[in-house]
Image 1 (cartoon, rainbow, N blue to C red):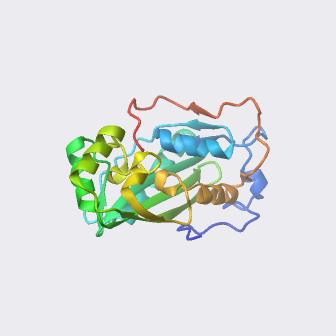
Image 2: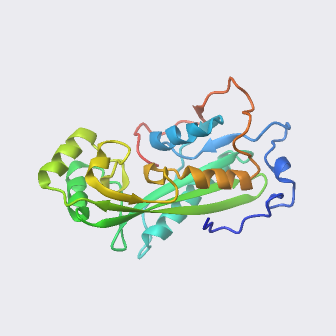
Length: 245
């Protein structure tokens, strides 16, 4: 694991409390888990951990800083999203994540429309693109804060314009970094994927998510706090668009 934050000792939280205590709220029940993202992709991935969570929209400007490298951008935005939601839900464990595609050191953002998606895929065909998927977990009540990043190498086939057009019309991946929706038809555009965290390319590296949640005191796998708890509920209103925030 290549965590960017200095993690606490395995048995303690950042403020010196036992990890089990750090994961408990004021009532003695487990802390709420909040996904600081409106992305349906991340929501679906987090549901695999079988722990109830809420969804909150992070109010974060995703504009890159001048000269900011793709990896640094992903790390900064993941942490900013987690902090923004934690400020509103200070007693919860908040997950923030961001993904930036990297072609020759230049960030490729969500295309937003068909013309930009065509340009991105033409630039990436026959090339290896690095996708940086950053992750942060923050709990304001305990002072816990840690983050990590998964690096995914994606090798694209030498795509024809016709293949690009067919793919974009079928998937419309305009909310995906680099126009690459590998969980759908986008997988047909690729020659290879190299990653040590299989779900990272979709938008949330679950191996690293579990590692950071364990550091924060939430042990997984574990018995859920309530068998009837919903898998994902909105913590407050979120944008109508389903992009990968």
